[in-house]
Image: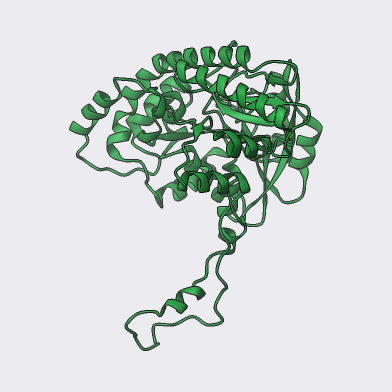
Length: 421
């Protein structure tokens, strides 16, 4: 994870309103400005990110194999601007609601199930995480999170004053990933654990929790009375299989399901996501009231965006089909080019990332060597808590021709690094 610079030393005393005014602080005074300990907890920027920034600042042209912004690769529905324009022409009135306008929530319930009052609109799933962390756990408590996993869970938890304890999934080639159920249950049962998160399909693993794993997670959370955050933003992008059951609609335990347009419509700039609450009927009113209070403090979603949601949802299926075709082709291209005695692409069931294993002798930090020697930016596996030194993560989103060039460049670079040792 990219970390943050250290916080300046906390001053012994701070000025008060009773202090005499000055023309402005001297330069030295700014050295005593303090920051929160949560901000300081993340430490220095990691070496790969620091070196990439240095090369870019020096004018070195890098080939970026990490970019997962769909708008950089021509993905996105051409009808999106017109839907937003129609909404803009009819959304002059502002009637704030902590859950978001009812017509938007009605459209979500008709598509994904549940009732309109089970949904809250947010500007992003990252914001949804932060709301639910604030609602579900006290500072000092622990969030159980998957490893390998979504890198933003940790900093978002830190912002809320929470710690993260990971539970593992394991990979067996060529069969794919499986959840370590015993370890999951042990982490969830640790004193101080306040809530559990799952990401299905995983980021970067691309693995869905199967029916038995899903049931195990739900049963552990029910038994321990832990709320579950289920991040399913990549759920529609199943590769070579039918997407499994969604997480909404559970009645045995509390589930907050997260989704949004960033992935389903390839529209991160629209800034619209949502939370769906499921769980025992007797618990839902109090939980809903609590999230209403959090949401009412922010009201982050623009009226125009919310008004456009029913029309935007009508575009999702077509866009998902288009994106899946791109991902399927790129995955096949990566498998064809990036395979050999020392190279293998791991099984990918969904999502936008491919994980590559490079075995045998080589530099201690393969991603850093590729960056410095060949100017190829490929995320190291340790960004996602993958311990294998030869593991790399690359985007599956580029246009087909560009993806083919990326795979060939990476193959040549890996062979060169192997020869150089």
